Length: 299
Ligand code: URA
Image 1 (cartoon, rainbow, N blue to C red):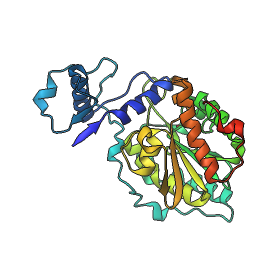
Image 2: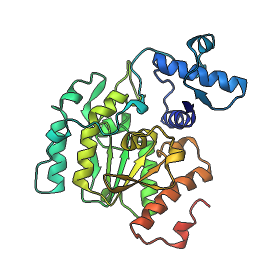
Image 3: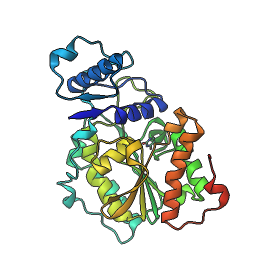
């Protein structure tokens, strides 16, 4: 089977945009990276055959930008499609959506798959905004600023997101904003640096995001960035290949877009336009008014 480097590159760009300098890589990923590296050096493109032999890759150095460790690593392709075996036990009680979301939040701390995780920090960052909203935005996990204020998307990426929402004519308070993982992933000697959640961490929180979607029942979901998109869609495709159309999540239209941190890293107007086109598609779907000026942003 041929593996494409595109989703990995997307993801690493996102991390870089958030100031992350290193990623942890397990043995299997290390082999794949070595093979990518070999092919890039040989000028044979950005995909690699998984059947490459061990010996063939063993003599090549790991690309210098990647710090190698044997710690567990995020492997989004390994996240089972819809493996919320325990989700049936998760009951969102209450008569309003607000109460039901509060009930889910209370259950996080005693949820066995979450309690079993040992590499998350202690402050829960559940969600923000209006549970009756038409638009639900889903990111990956809180970072330093989000943990500090116990609110999703309040750091630099959050400010970009607020700008995008404002351009759509949507106040942050009128959207529902959440992450798949509800705690900031921990790292040794951590200060302001963040890491991506592992596959196991994403998997442990899947029942919550699924139930949150069920409770909010938005008219549209926007998956922000590759981790959110791949996890929700059980895909290992890049954002570039997942965007541009509506997917379905339990019959709710889901649009994939780049993580707002992507435009912190890549300020090119063409990249901003891509995000904006995703938002225009959402606005069209919701039959929101769009004026000429809005249609033409970033052209
Ligand atoms: N990135 C995310 O995916 N979520 C946040 O809340 C902040 C940054």
